[in-house]
Length: 496
Image (tube, rainbow, N blue to C red; front, side, top):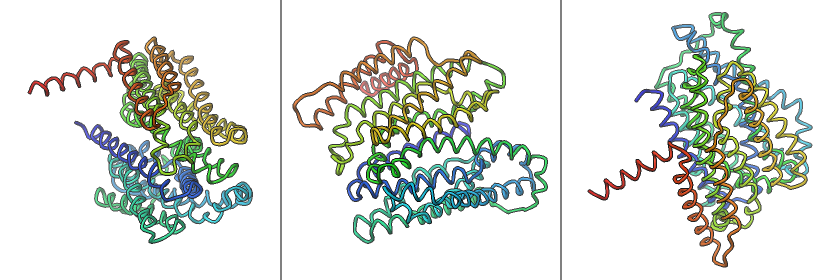
């Protein structure tokens, strides 16, 4: 197994472990000891810092890989690595200056419904600085073909530290305000961890002779601007809902929304792993203009993701009442039930359209991706602005679904128009009908038995129907092969 394959598999394992820890923390630990206002405040602080750091890093994660082949030797490499650490620091300063210019309007937006947030601007910017440097350090590791440890530190390490520090609240060593400030220690330790790993991997010796990079600076600046806009639009879409809920409703509703949206986000995990694997294949296929291979990969990814993501969403929805029932203070957070569905549908839409965004990114029309993401961000802001006052946090979930649907439909149209690429076939229609049928069935089942038992029965019924439908109609050759292989292994085990 090659280095890239090993790194991809290990990185995927780290992501799934991180999701498990995040699920435990958000669904069971935080609701048991924090109010929904406190959860909302914590998430808005970290989301704001994440948004600012994505902008402040100025495209370094993408630049570090794209231009590495031109500066792989000696002093040129040292100057390049040095620049990759300095640029984000400049980015943080620029972002802070922009924030100062708009500080009063931002403060006015949150002053009525989330005035507590205005006390923690220092915390937002402390985490922004640490997270920006982390992104730069992770880019240095990636330049040396290592992604697992930085990913593990981000996906697992930060969550483990959060749980450990949170125990201080559980045993009443300190209060929530102290825990908030300890976020600086958590992100600081994560940064030190990746610095230490980089030192062990390839000791960094700075060199400030940037004139060595002069032949590449114009290209770096242009590509960096493109990457900044793309990354900023992407992070804005994922954070704007909670940020706007905090200002337009209150922190309590933001906390409920955070919990509900996280449940819905679980279904998108397959796409993260697939993107890492599909990228090199798509790049090579575009190089040779192998549209047939792109179409084949696109269709397979679409049906597999539609079935897996749709099944996950259905199982979650079948058991949603039971999930809220066993959650600490679940009756409060059940107000976000429909948020789970709409966020889940938004992510399922993304999954069903397969590798459309990735195909655009590697195609000659790669700039479409920027325009589409900027449009997506604009739609997200507008729909949240109008739907939150009408439907509260459910409106925010609906806004996310509408945004993703429009984005994917436009992306699909452009690839279909320009290259004849489509992920859909007759199996897609059959899969959609199966999912809709099972959804209607489990949604309207009502029996006068305890909530947890009813939820369990719904989950079992949904799982059985989905399994029979997928296998009987042979909707996915890959899943059918997986089932056959698993059955053969089980038979051999029983015989022994």
